[in-house]
Amino acid sequence: MEKRRKIIMNVSFGIGFLLILILAPLKINSVHQFCPYAAICFGPMILRGFTVYTVTAILGILIAISTIFFGRKFCGYICFLGTLQEYFFKLNKRKKIIIPQKLEKLLSSIKYIIFVITLFLAIFLMQYKYMKFCPIQILAFFIPLGFALLTTLIILFVFGFFVERFWCRFVCPYAAFMNILQIIGKRFRLKKFMIKRNWEVCIDCNNCIRNCPMKIQIMNFEEITDKNCIFCLKCVGTCPIKDGLK
Ligand code: SF4
Ligand code: SF4
Ligand code: SF4
Image 1 (spheres, rainbow, N blue to C red):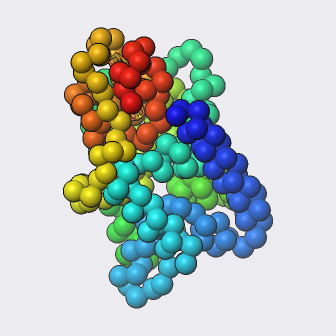
Image 2: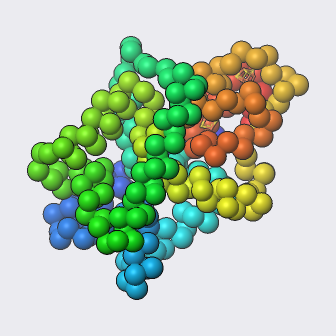
C-alpha cells in the first residue's frame, strides 16, 4: 500500500513540477489558475462579487469533497509542497528535532491563525500581501529577495530539514481549511477508508508513533480519526506485527 502511495506521490510531484516549469515563464496569473491551494487565496473574493478561475474552483471543490469523505489523502498522495518536504526531510540523516507534545499542540494552532488572516486578506482584496509568502509563487517566479521570500524559504527548507513536515504541521493554511472541513462534514466521513489499529495484537512498541510525520498519538485510537492524519501509511509500514495496523 505504501509503495502505491509513493508511486502516486512521485507522479503527482512530477506533474506539478512540469506545470510550474511550463507555466512560470507565461504571464503571472497562469500558475495561480492551476494552483490547488488557490481556492483559499481567491475563493473568498466571491463574497465581493468576483468570479474565480474555473480550474481553481474545480480543484477547490474536488479537494473539499475528497477531504470530507476520505480525510486528508490529498496531503499524503498529491500535494506538491507536502512531497517536497518529504523529499527534503529524507536528506537529513542525522539531526532530527522532535517537538514535545505540548509545544506541538500550541504550534499547531498557528496554521488556523494564518488561515483566518488569508481569508480576511482575500475578502478585502489584499491577497497580494499574503501571496508574497506563498511557496508556490516563490518557487515558480523566485520574486526578488526580501523578508517574505527569506521567511518562507527558511520555514520550508531549514525548519523542514530538521522537523518533519514542519510546514504541514504548523504553517499550512490549507491544512487548517481541510481540518475545518472535516469537522463540518464529520458525519459524512467514510470509516471504511480509515486506518485501524488492532489493539488485540498490538505490542505497544510505539514504532507507529515514532515514525508518524504528523506526530499523531496513534495509541489513542482504534480508528485513526485524527484530522491531521495525511494517510502516508508510514505507521502501517513500520508496525512489526502483521495486521497490527491496516
Ligand atoms: S498540509 Fe498543506 S503543504 Fe502539507 S501536504 Fe497538506 S496541503 Fe500540502
Ligand atoms: S497516523 Fe499513520 S498514516 Fe496518519 S500521518 Fe501518521 S503515519 Fe501517516
Ligand atoms: S507499531 Fe504496531 S505493534 Fe507497535 S504500537 Fe504501533 S500498532 Fe502497536
